[in-house]
Length: 294
Image 1 (cartoon, rainbow, N blue to C red):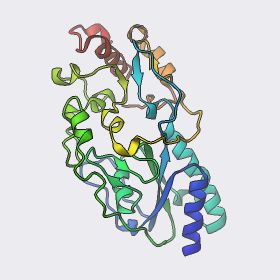
Image 2 (cartoon, rainbow, N blue to C red):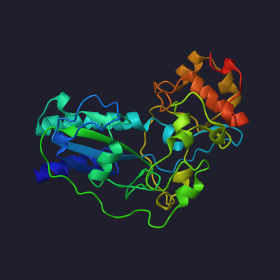
Image 3 (cartoon, one colour):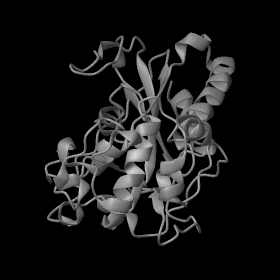
């Protein structure tokens, strides 16, 4: 099946992904404890791929605005899913299987980072993000089940960070522990994503201009300092920044309509969270009045 593997990975690269690897033996994979993954992976093989969003965008946020991080200015998650779904049609015609045999994971309860490390797609850095050879950590990780056995790719054994602690030093809330794990209760992005209703003062005072997407640790990573091209997509376009006062004044319906279909249109990110993030941009604290959370 070597030729099949090479063709699958080659077609995946042609579809815009910058890395494509095979993880075998996944029919034995059980959902990790503590996740919301509803069922085990019942396929012998996974295709694991990285879609680059890069750092070559010419867009720049306005100095007084609430900033949306580059990875969220387009819906790269949906783009990755659509690209893999389209590939699955080709794979079914060439190699067999049903539509249900090709199951796609992206920004899902499945442990996509673990998949990426296990097949050598990349290695985990001190900030827990996957570092790839071709695009640093400026990638979206996605995976798809393959219903026939293929030879898996080996995990990489190199230490990507060495003595570098740039990401640890750059994190304003000390959420990056440096051992490959994040203290989520200190992580700005954890709160910006709508995971908690209350932002503690020690995080709020370091919030800065972030509406969505904290990138301090990625901005200083040596692997991200070269020019990295992002894949082209028009899905879920958002501006690089927005007026915080206007966001605060928007109704829930207006916020939902504006962000629908974007990377910020996630079900867990409610209008009150986006409104709260805008308030933090302006004031560096969550105000003590309930009108912000209708």
